Image (cartoon, rainbow, N blue to C red; front, side, top):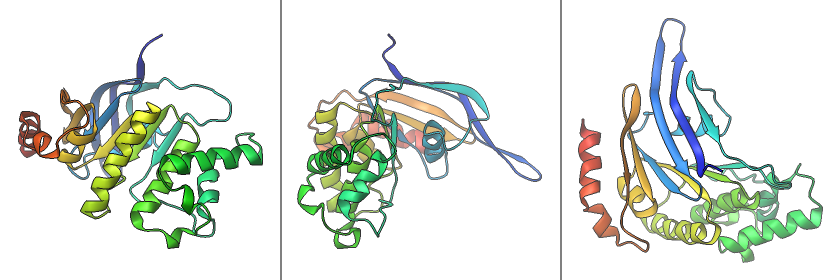
Length: 248
């Protein structure tokens, strides 16, 4: 069995307007192994979020192909997507929000509740299950969104700048929480960010998407083991290489 969780083969996407075709990215090749944490970095508008939408089945590529190694295990969803904002339903309590993705999977009410409770415990919010979304901080709501994604036990976790809207202290805390959860679950993660330091702190590997149309301009493994020193990765040779590539 191949160890690849994601395989992109010369993937391309163009937006077709009334009078012109706008290429977003082209000839994009990528292979992500099972259990790997890969960060996609690049400037705003380069196509990072669009790539996640393609993988999640929310958009179709214009060229090339992609393969996802997904299971058909009963009671799960193979892909979960965490957005920049939590997108919680204000009329549902926290536990009910986490249960949302489990509905329609043929699980009993008791099984849904147990899965949701376990996911909230994993993100450290077991004691917030009965609250409403407006009663939680922004960081807590993002943890609920992550719990909702983890509750469906996905093979592939897609994260679209999930900490970008948070203050610096909360962002650092949630980065560490994500590393803890990743260590506990072993999930394959594709994480989009425009923050180079965040990518170097979290990921096993960094892929730089740049240019117009965009391509993978840099694909490098991070040698430093976890836990990492933030200052060390931010001043590393790899960090300098990425910043130079972004300036081109």
